[in-house]
Image 1 (tube, protein in one colour):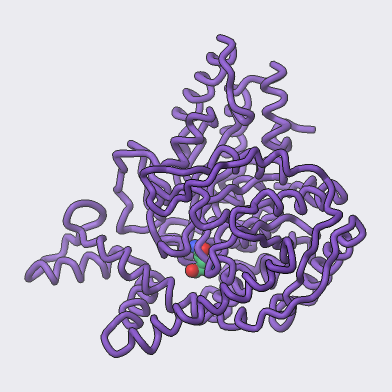
Image 2 (cartoon, helix red, strand yellow):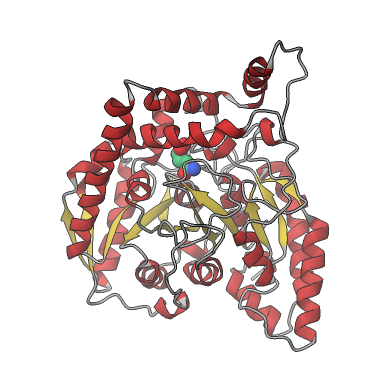
Length: 486
Ligand code: GLN
């Protein structure tokens, strides 16, 4: 098998065995980036010098006999909303085009400690608002399986980079599906951990009660290894949980007998493409044949997830994005302005794209006097009911199963002018963020030559159980070994 087609753990084994150096692997990855970026456009910046230097350091340490982590030397891509010291971090927005953070996000620091060379920062929907990566202010990323299609979003650059062999692992963020949906559409594995499992220090906030960082990888083992690197308490993030981190690879047993899975009817009904439903149905059958007990479960409040999310997320975003005013950093208008308010207004009108402006207006509306009780407070109450449905289901089931995305990757431009159609792309993923629980997407088949994802959801802090079920399925199938031809 070619070097670039290896998974991260396969590459790491070769590095450990001395068959290939971190520098060689990183060089090969950078060559691949140069070769396929004209077709894929996954990266907004390529950090070749840094990557090669970090790879050389990993090789030196290994040569000196230093004990290195299990993914040392494996090239990594980082979504461009995680702060990287001395390197542009733009959120793919004009308003942050020239922002150079003075510090690293905790996850970036952890990956550095684990000796993963960072090859670049990846494209995304502006401020992570979108499901196709078409809302980037800079470029459109193409799906490696069919370059006329979107890679999903908002972590579309990270997903496309891993799928196209331009990185072995990547970091993404997920507020309503932004790791899982692009992972599904690009045929790879993506996990949104429990809210609080991974530090968000240095993650540029979209909706703070929903945001979570997680890995995008080629297989389940890589996901487990990345989770072991990323998870854990961080004194810099007050919302990070002070709960011990297991060695997630211990969950990769291959067995599922004794576990029970619920399949929420609400996530397999209307709006799910019949071909997607068939693939997911076949995956559930496969898991059943492996010994997982599966049955349908009713979760009636899930139906309200989309409206609840589109009140809470914009409300939080309108507050988080109020800081971009052109005064201290980021874009500032060069037009003549009358006073400071005019400067703010002009700067923000120029700096934010249309989708972000729409969300800010929605959020301010939902939070304003007279509407707060009617919309925001009501949405919070319904969020509690949705969470209650999950609590009830998890009293009975170890995991829940559903499609990750209602459709496979769609053509670029198809939903760009239809905001409702775009938002329906997240019907299966959004409830999970509202409940704060962990969920992952794994490849489970193809429809029209495009990958389909199976979503596995679990109880808070039971990422290990998700990995256990995912790994058993992966062992029994070969979807994760398929690679797109570019
Ligand atoms: N597509 C959803 C949105 O536009 C979710 C994005 C995300 O998870 N960051 O808000």
